Length: 315
Image 1 (tube, helix red, strand yellow):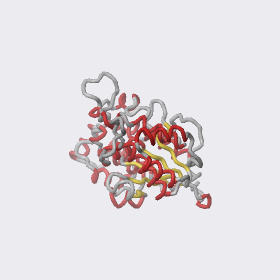
Image 2: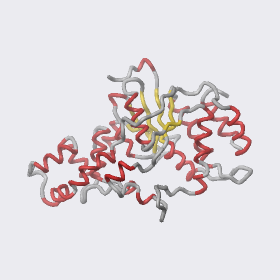
Image 3: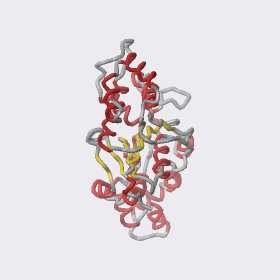
Image 4: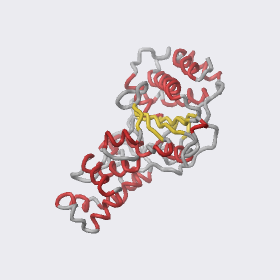
């Protein structure tokens, strides 16, 4: 069932870590707190949220959180998954994050919650899985826009259910590219989010430690999906001895069989992560004005706070 446009509801799903990393590296820390605490990621996150609300006019918004940035079910399938981001020599699952950003992450969460935005994670799951679950739950209920700098979430694009991605990696938040199925076709020669996921499995992704299939890059993967319709059908064609798949391409696909068996479970976002049930509507009043005022005084963030309040119609 497609969304009823007469409801005029839009759910904005923030890939929060993607945004605060962007804020940290993109906003100069020219105004640290009086105690020396850096504030660039905190300021940037609040300003980005204000910009997104102004641009997309959502009725609902969730800041999706990584309760587990490298879930065990993914590393069990492919041990190299995000392994290059681990703190060198660490015996636990600690991600390498600049200290000046790490100290701001809990401040970002507290500030968002003080405004009244739901900040949702799920034990054992990444923010991507929270996004996938919420998009799935709201299919046919309202339009959904996912805000991220991560191409992995292009797999959720679905014109029939009005699910788009506001992609920040190239143009930033203010001019984020809206990715729909036409954009996927133009950029990657795949016609749907599901086809993008299949293509990305074969292509691999070094930024996530996913090897892909040797000798099969983005264009070749897209061509195979266009010819056969899906990764499953490509593999069936290989198994059936389709003469159109021959030589090194056949050998490489056969050699990657074990990887292709498990990669979908790693690449595809979950649609059933356990989430706290709470209202997702934009706040109509500040949830914790005392904490927000303390933050303004302690961290000197009156500007970003004021801008976000105005975007919400609260100031």
